[in-house]
Length: 366
Ligand code: FAD
Ligand code: UDP
Image 1: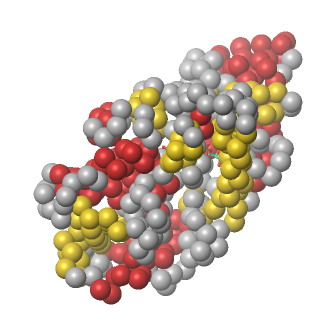
Image 2: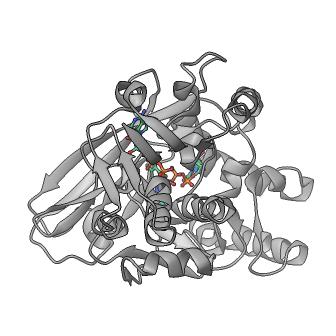
């Protein structure tokens, strides 16, 4: 079968390209996904009035107005501002670690002295990575405290390695914040699609020029398709049959539980850096403020990845960057194949970045 544009993966990367190619370029697009639903990792479903995110809590946030305006064509966003609490020393404290966290976890006089020292060194509102703070001898006590209480044990659970073995960008995602802003993200635009991510994704692929095939693995159909262009949002090492080695990934296991009570916990997401085998518990009804007599929560357990498991996270470090670079060199020989999305680009992208990259690629196409 002849195909003008083949898109592998019906996640946000694939659907953004499909939507643009169909609605702007008026080209035919075939989108395939090996899963039985669209949306990729942002897929959600209704459970008695609560939209549950099948692959863990997803909160949209961006400073990129272009991406925000683009997605708002397909869904209105409920103005939800995300806050995360961590269970530390028997208390629920704000994460990222900020001046409120400091005053909750340390005795008043110590916290006040540290706060004054911090605000002499940094301006109010600045953000500093824990790895940077550790380099400053005058903050040795504080950085060791934050490292121990917030980062070390969570990271050991999540990545099965210590923070030093990962790219520093992982920790820039959750900086120490020198303000009393308890939000997890400081982005201008934040929210949850009002009818859910799945509905937003369905709205993105409404064009008659888009054909969607679910339960369809690229490897099973590649031989029967003659494609002018392929946009591949699966794993790049799998595309090349692992010929240059296997890229490392981390996987997850979600244990969903239903409770016949209005709320299970006092916040949408509670992190457990130092207790239990799971890293966090998410309670879904908070995102759209759903009023139901029951609640659905997920316990998120990190898991090592082996072939056949879902790939949730690339593992950013020097060794994986070298393998990815080798695949990219290999990919250059293929003139009509574009690798997109979190897995195709092997980047720890959030949703907005995946959409931004797909829009950029679309604009560069002839
Ligand atoms: P995916 O959503 O993974 O889609 C790729 C699709 O390709 C999948 O559906 C897969 O089945 C399909 N596929 C792969 N290989 C093949 C093949 N060979 N044949 C056919 N189909 C194939 N981002 C945020 O902005 N905010 C958050 O709060 C947030 N929370 C997250 C929480 C978790 C636990 C995780 C894991 C990620 C989170 N993210 C969050 C990141 C977000 O999920 C991603 O940025 C985004 O969904 C990636 O989109 P994608 O299209 O690149 O990939
Ligand atoms: N992190 C941590 N403690 C926390 C939150 C995050 O150690 O309470 C570290 C951990 O290594 C984690 C990384 O920061 O994997 C990135 O956190 P983020 O919340 O962005 O992870 P994601 O939501 O993408 O799983």
